[in-house]
Image (cartoon, rainbow, N blue to C red; front, side, top):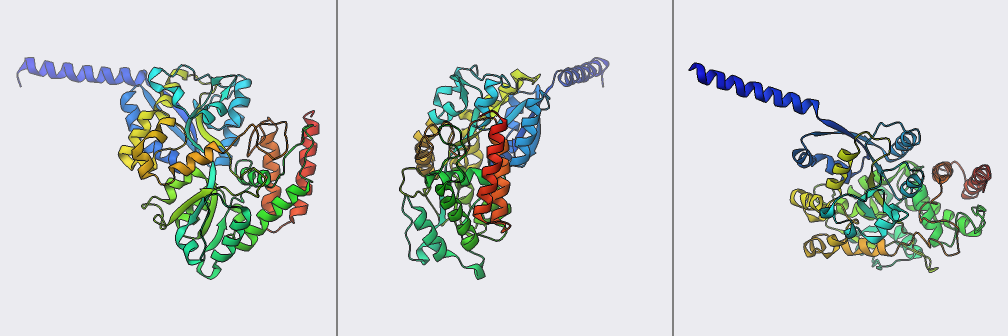
Length: 439
């Protein structure tokens, strides 16, 4: 090799090494705490698109079970621990933590981001005093997902807006324990975001409420007894074995395996139960609004898993860049390109529900939007209440109250106590907590 060329190659190698060293020295790591559900796992598989656009940002994932995630991020942000740069949180935490100045405002995500496109219900639930503090990755309500083939075999037709009475009738007709087909799958796993989210919506639809206008606990009311007894009877008579340990992911797996006749849970599950790669019953799934008892409130919730930046992060700009990517219209198009439109994260943007291709490919799209629009966190119950929130009570004490009460009701489903005993214990612990908090 001529000397001149050899020196040129050496220079290129040196430059490359220097550039690499520069990049290594100037790479910022963004640590993301998130939940172990399907949409979040899918996002992790697509992040090469983000890092190609931001070669100076390295992503580190901490993926946790829902209850563990809530415990970890709450502890970290309350102590300004600084373990995470992006948090996966929801509508309960966002306004409370924003009021404490624990979150960074997300009101500067750029014109291309189009924050006005976020569904109004999601934007309102993730804001504090009009400022957005968490960007929705996906939004959801809850609805009935059911096996159309089993309903047909039972000679029944699911109404678009069923009553709880019909759900009980259908569950009895569908259940075939010898064939391991259970009429209804419901959350029984303890946790304020697990069984208590579901049980609270059932209670709302039966006319119950957590507190009266003076913040006095109401779990000793006849409405709570009727609601909890109905829920427990459904699971005892028509639910799968071990229902007291089943949360969202466990029931999703059961439905995909063809073991649930009906599953009443998050609308976001619709894409997973109709995905032929994951579900053995993908071609026989129908959707309906969450049930009611005719009192004017359906048993559906409103929620968003959203991304936020804790005030203790030392990589705020980089964290915002990731959130802008993950919750953008372009991300939805990226998922559609790789997985199909039916699998994009739903419930966050108005433009998605104006996309004819999405409406055609996602048979659950309109029912999802109808369910979201039917949920009103400002009027969650039949009687007036002093709180906001459908499946939770938007006060700092709720996480503790909901977690403790959830353990009582999970023990009930496990057969360790009666509905009356579970309600008596829950009433007592809620009363003690509220008195200690000064209500």
